Image: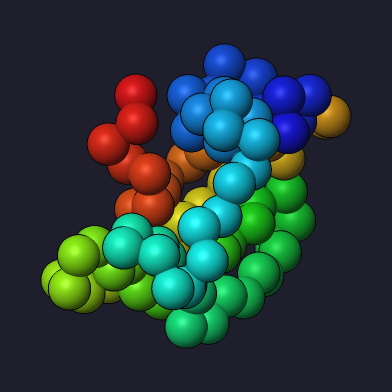
Length: 86
């Protein structure tokens, strides 16, 4: 991740938490309802519907997010997921 997503706070946060994903029996967890990838040239579009659950409250985050492949790195063009991570 660090090699492909240079200077990316969301990737750094995932690495710091060792990619931990809470089980769906936790008080806080998330689960993709669907997740698809589409590549056109150097642009990758990620479509998804992510359900998040926190202490009885359910919400959804939906794509698409878009990324561009530049050599050996991936640059974020737009993302809805983790958009609060700067």
